[in-house]
Length: 374
Ligand code: NAD
Image 1: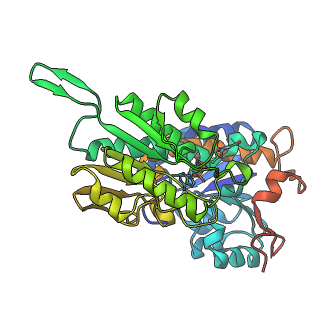
Image 2: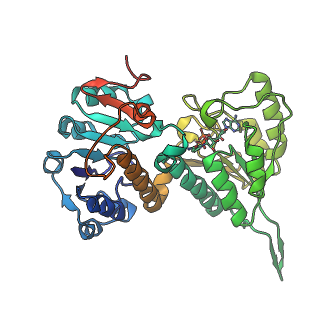
């Protein structure tokens, strides 16, 4: 088979879908790999590394794609790329189907078999393919590093001859994959860390990382389906607001990561709360692209509002592109292996497999995914 990795066309996307060492593993299985020239450049993987791994590097899109069996991307491909894809090839990436019905129609009309990795079920067998986890993990780490560099003070307690600098207080809102990594990173940097989440199971996870759990007095828990959170009732939201209002005043850095699948991100830090925060505090809103946990954050922008620096994240994993690409490429390889025969020599797709049905968007000229069929 010929596998092709495209150069990403979406603005600010520095990641690449295939790294040289993952490409090498695919070649060792007996396949050919071509990459679009400079596909890995922004992530720190120049063409020469791919050539060394045994890949061919092509500049012309038509030459690159005309014999492709499998095409790999991070973000959705451009219209030009879709129209150049050969009929019946496989396209695998994070295709954002919820925001992109037009893309789905185009893929179907070009008879492309497409798979979107954000739709992977969170089952044990799919853990090694789970792009949301691998990318969120790095995003959680990077959010703390960015906050630390924007904060005009130190994070750890420092006792010096000139006096003592107190440890910074960091609050993490949302203790999922990104939030737990943010807790661990802030702890390593010496901050006093606390965290809050609506799901009951997170209390123990937060405490096992050495952080304090912020509890809201309420009967309701936020456990939804598949390990995700559900939207909370208005009375819970009121109790949550009261609690956070009190805690936020004492904090130096807030990292917000709260998401509810298929819904706008919940508002946790209101403008009124920002006004009560200490001057020079920093908020990093990892949910800025899905509406934001703070209404003052704007995706891709940093602004100072009421004396607080607010960083609205846009594509955080791309800011740590070398590692994000490496983990993403390994996720892809594991996903691909699941579509292959047991020796990895060719495709042998089990269309009844839960991983396949959950991720397959288009096949045989039609939109196949139940959630996106018209
Ligand atoms: P996510 O990105 O959808 O949300 C991030 C966090 O925000 C979640 O912990 C959620 O509970 C929290 N949140 C939502 N509304 C909130 C609110 N109003 N206030 C505070 N916090 C709020 O979630 P995620 O990080 O992708 O992970 C969700 C779950 O999936 C976790 O339990 C995780 O362990 C699990 N998971 C399982 C697998 C697997 O089994 N393969 C893989 C990855 C994650």
